[in-house]
Length: 374
Image (tube, rainbow, N blue to C red):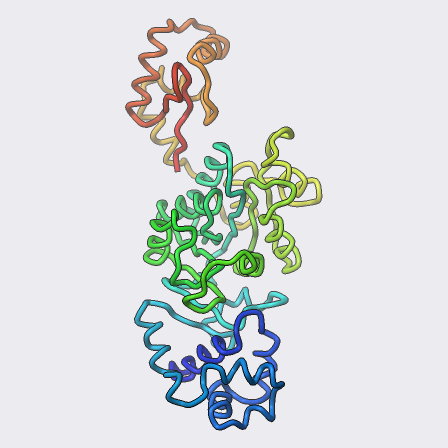
């Protein structure tokens, strides 16, 4: 398909409008997009389609001069936006196999490589500190193993996992519920720009289409469709995340979930998925062993950094996690773990030094937590 042919595909996709994939496929029996355009301009199209769809299509092409087919396409390309249709070899192969594939995919940056494994990393927008930590950890380790990360660029788990993958030098693609020329949510502008430079963003909606609630559920099938497997980090029992899971199961994708505390509402969805048969993964290595037959865990940067600390500091850090603990509690745990009393002033000194080194953060008063390393 030439760029000139694609310009007519772009015109037809805008003319027909969103949500009319069935009509687009039906129009293939009438002729190519270029032929349909010529019929719309000449008035012959009314004999081929219903009055309703004839009006929709001819609305943008009452005369050849009203719509500059090539000019509009070139203006879109000048913005760095590409377009690929199902008729092209470069259309993502994984998407061709799903029950309701998009006819057209608009994108900026690069499309995912068909040669690399791909994981959809999804979860709650209003995530916990535990969710933030695990999303970052999985995003980092997947990227290091050359596994591509797909998500919706939403705030919370989606964006955190994608940011971590990009920081680790990996590839990530954001699937949007609006045109690719629009950053949504706006707070993820930095992530949006990094994705364009280092990974990619895509949408089945033409440029200029703003975000609307009705557009997000359909885009979820693309998130799962582009992936070999779907990983849920945190989710409530009823959430948009589980819509993606339903679509993934319909598409025959593997679904994995991170377990959480039974009393935590944001873990209830994950725990239920595991109960229903989703794969349980508690660490990136477990997921990578499922995906990559030749995967062997290596020493992480976090472990390497830990070895640079003093022996006393290493002992303290091993007692900590991302949940805040009081210095008094750490002193007690230190005595129980190492059978030696650590004076409180010395413990505080070591904790403050660890804060200065970026290993630990003070959470108000004498409460401390380990910093996420991703």
